[in-house]
Image 1 (cartoon, one colour):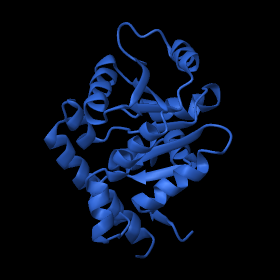
Image 2 (image 1 turned 90 degrees about the vertical axis):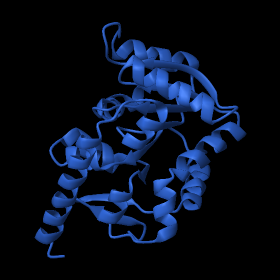
Image 3 (image 1 turned 180 degrees about the vertical axis):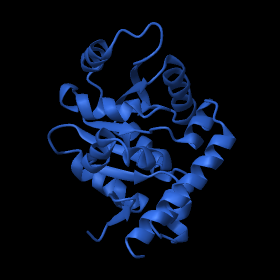
Image 4 (image 1 turned 90 degrees about the horizontal axis):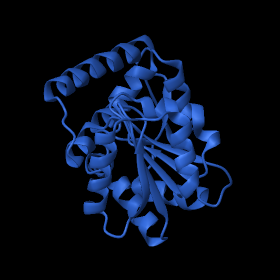
Length: 227
């Protein structure tokens, strides 16, 4: 358990970017779908009340600390790791790895807007990234989960990349991971900074309240543990 930290009762991976890339290289050769996910304040707080999300976190093949506040909650004060998390350095390194090996990506959003702006952001930020297709689950013209699964399997991407402001993609991953033909399912969740970079609007006041609520929840949890 040396590379695990307890945050609100969930065991989260604690690795540097280089260590996570080495894990990716080794796991890529394994059979079956691998699930990677950003661990955010929103996800952790929601998982305390949602068994599906709790199972999602603990079933991840690689849990990636996605916000400095989560790092601080784990009582990690290493400056190098703080910079890596703040600058999303693992995601940049991961996409370069995908580009170098010519792997394809399927972009899946909760809404058409999320899928479109994330796809555009990836195309503009990571030259050479091969996006096989994009789709979405919700909205007036969404056709349902089965159609999305069939669409994914029709292009057989190496990577499925999802984003969702309501964490619906994490639930979708738990329920459907055995149905899709891919190597890695990477969930960006509701990461506010990435959404802003991609052009999605985020409410700064809501984020401020989220940070405050998360800090109080962590303090209460640690107190109950006697820390």
